[in-house]
Image 1 (cartoon, helix red, strand yellow):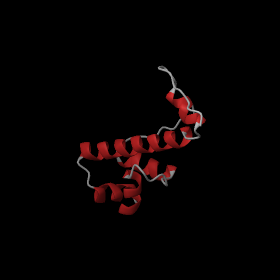
Image 2: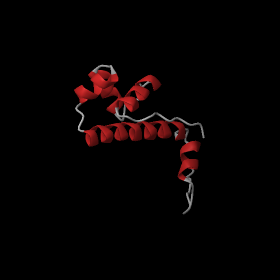
Image 3: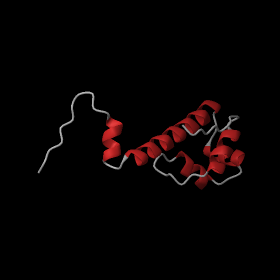
Image 4: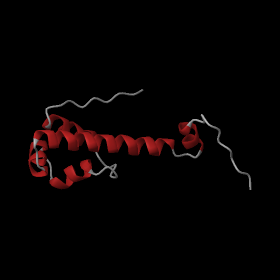
Length: 95
């Protein structure tokens, strides 16, 4: 059984890419950041989940999916509603 040796300075992204995990790890990281940001804006504005859902014109269940960092079934429409409910704008870019 061959053992792969990683040297100091090896690129972790390259490792994830070789293992076929990079895209999934990036998706999860982005979702976690978005969930965290929405939660922090809610906290800073003193918004309850009930009030946030009302502002978004959606259900608490939909908001809970948005705030769940492990749930990736969030639509752009939901993200846009959340941003607007917080007085923010959603900005998406391809890089």
